[in-house]
Amino acid sequence: MPGTETRTEAASRRRITFFIALALFAQESTWNFYDNQVPVLLREHLTSAALVGALMGMDNLLGIVIQPWIGNRSDNTRTRWGRRMPYLAVGMPIAALLFVFLPWTTSATTLIAVMFCYALIANTMRPLAESLVPDFIPPERRSRANAVVKIATSLTVIVAALISLLLVDDHPRAAFAVPALILATVTIVLIGTLRDSRSAAYQAALAEDAAAGPDHARVPFHRVVLDLLVDRDRRRLLLLVTVLLFGAAWFASRSLITPYGMEVLGLSRGEAGGLTLPSGVAYLLAAYPAALLAERLGRLRVIGAGMVLFAVALAVGAVVRTPTGTIVAFCVAAAGAAAFSINAAVVLWNLAPSSRVLGAYTGLYAVSWYLGGFLGPALIGAIVDLTGWTGMLLDIAVLATLAVLVLLVLGRLHRRAASPIFVKA
Image (cartoon, rainbow, N blue to C red; front, side):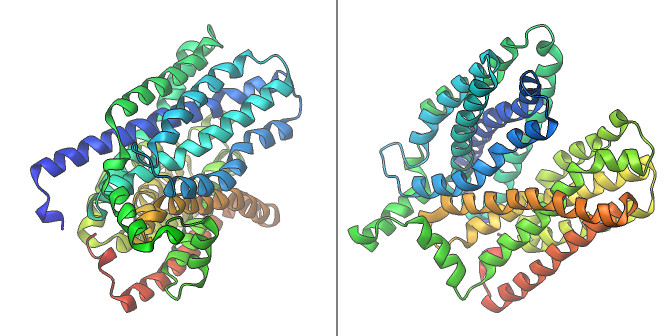
């Protein structure tokens, strides 16, 4: 229970949280710089903006396939280093090397090949580092640990922007070495400090292996998915549907805001593109308080309140069609989104039926979130084609409301199950 944590345990938890956040900070630094600068490399070889966009979306498609697979594979790995660290220790340096090589490619073919290899390796690293949170952190403290991780990854947007601002114009190739160096350096730090074989979840998985016997020591991915689909307890499945729907609303609000600002608010392209900048700060400020509120009030309540806040803010923004009103609406919506994103993955981890499937569940969460990211902008874009730009924020609010309705069903099932998982956990 939260009140029984000793000072030594708290210090150890904070130390582990720092290293996990550091790992994801390093990974996301390369991802954000990749998103900023690789399109420019592609434009040196390709004239089609549609083809450039499709190639830049390749990493998301790979993630949908790779992340649950590698999560499950790591779940079934047993070494003296643990089940995540062996992959991270090998994969992160390879990703760094591939990243450095990107600006040195001399043709579209070699550039796309290196992009594919980097996206493939980097997508395997992301869920492994995220899975270290439930591996090491007890259920009642996972929200605040996840908040620290989310804050660290959000800060990489600033890091990537600074590298672009300070280095890219004068040293376009050397600039790629900076995120890669961060990634390689953090790998060395992790190898020297972190062994997930010592984590509570890994030890629990070993105990479950022994109890299951040699014929059932491994949990194949199809069994994880089948269990999710046929289990009479529908909470995990409903949570993933909620993640997909809210992810669709969130990504639609971020992806389409620039044309909305130009079409509805009469802003220039640059001005419209800057509408979401203050909301990024609001997200960071709301992240840790959202974790503390969840531990005090219950995660489902805070998630639900966050989604309602998101929907109401955008609905109000649809009425107050001014730049200032839109910025305020997005800041409030971002605070609500923080309450969701900090806690939703934690709920899924805590609902996992076994310590042996935490990596697979991290991957399933990612699949739901990125599918929402693919479907949401397309769906809202299609509605805009039919009804016009003026109602876009209201359309997104309706999509978020659908996520709230699914969560209400999940909450009713929870009350029926009388599980302690969500009660101040």
